[in-house]
Length: 170
Image 1 (cartoon, helix red, strand yellow):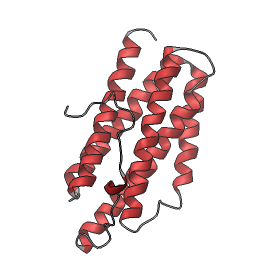
Image 2 (cartoon, one colour):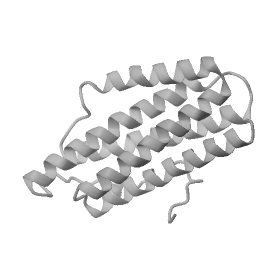
Image 3 (cartoon, one colour):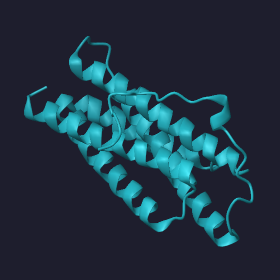
């Protein structure tokens, strides 16, 4: 991996934000828009899952869930910024992914730490696959591709953390 997944929030400077409207062909823009909307809504779901899995108990699991939630919030912001750079807005139905995230987060928390970790492995493995599919199918500009690749590396890191904690009986 060429990304340090220990960095939860990479630095972003004012000059990193740029207008991308009209920067690609119409057919490429349609795919870029669909891909960014997909990534944005799935990251909203991930943030919500972690938010509702966290309990008040002081534990390593809760610390790791908080760190993962923070990282996913960064991904959510990344894709929201990209949507606006291209002149688009997040999907109007994104709130529905919040409800799905609430269900996964709340019910896995109620079933205990092992289910929380298994849910994390399952959700993040699906995220890694989505990222791979979208990276392979869409002609991203260089900066956006780098953001997506970094976020995918983070998702790999989450899978490994949850698997490790599962194996250690967390």
